Image (cartoon, rainbow, N blue to C red; front, top):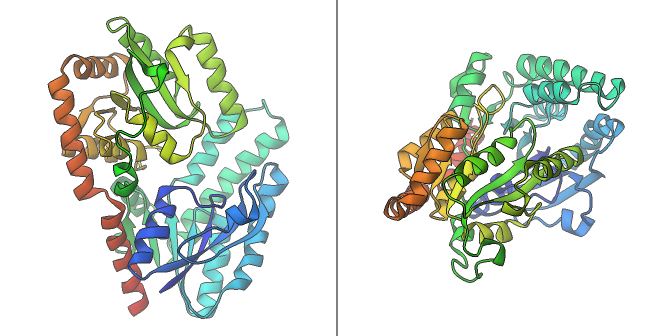
Amino acid sequence: MRLFFLMYDYLPAERPDVAVLFGKELKQLGIESDLLGQLKAGKSLVEGQAWPAGSAYIHGGEAVELAGQLWRPLHDLLLLRLLRPEHSIIQVRDKIRTGLLALWIARLTGRKMTYWMSFPFAEGFKARAAQVGASQGSGKQLFFRLRAVCAGHVYYKWLAPRVDHLFVQSDAMLEFMAGKGVPRGKMTAVPMGVDLALFAQGQSSHPRPPQMTGRKVLAYLGTLGQSRHSQFLLEVLRQVRLQEQSAMLLLVGDGASPDEQQWIRQLIADSGLTEHIWLTGWLPQSEGVALLRHADIGLSPIPRGELFDVSSPTKAGEYLALGLPCVGNDIPDQRLVIEASSGGICVPMDVDAFAGACLRIFNDPQYASACGEAGKRWVAHNRSYEKLAQKVAAVYEELCRR
């Protein structure tokens, strides 16, 4: 079986739910995929075309300006000419306008068409419009507002109900889409998983960095930004330090855009906690994992609301795979992971609640160790990409039998 897979994320594919799930695990099950999309800024064409589970085809580069965003579906239309008889399924990930084009072509050619919804983009566009306000000019603000309205109408009314199968990120997202009229039987929830092979590598090969020497380390892995309320992490650190003066905060990640990167750096500079915070910026996953091995607690605060309640957080599972106790809040999928695994403490997204949970783990090494071992066991049995691949493969096989 071979998929024709149009990506929203820029190539080369770096997200684990693409690189590991499709590039490794599904390939081992006999399902190959050709990736198609645009090249990430700063990457060479050779890097962009590196893909172990098939071929990667690129037309266009990372869209920085509004004009580039408008042209992306036209780039994809040109890529659709590469469709071959061996492509039994067309799959689109998070591209609403391209999804409509792909659906039309699938119907004309008698193929199945699936859509991978990793995030509620229509709601995300709305939040971005509110965040930008008029600060970036009225033209850009109008663009974001129009994009939010059009994306919501097209996706929920025309695209999602008509695809042959819809993959979503969580059970909560499945229920959300069922409320929009998509039959439950046409959807499969595929939560974020863990590449156990990566997390088993080099468990003690990297020495503890000097920045962490003599410190109790709170760690956060992932994107930082205003919509994620990342200032909360600094507030938790401040509260923890009232009782544990050796505490520091390791931030393995960065803002998703230049303005968000500037925002987090200014936030740290204004906090008075600069000497107790290490912001690494974006790192290769292997380097980020190596740093996390030396942390004591993984933090996963995710704001409640329509954007994130339907998400499947990557970081909670990755902390647990490392044997790192997780303190996270109660969005549905994350609460399930923490409570079912006994790998940490789930609390509301409140500074005092988070700080209290962190201090409990710091002050009870035996409890911290038990959380770490329980979390590793649960992730291996429930959230490995090997097991998730079997679930996804079964959907494709059923579609191709129809």
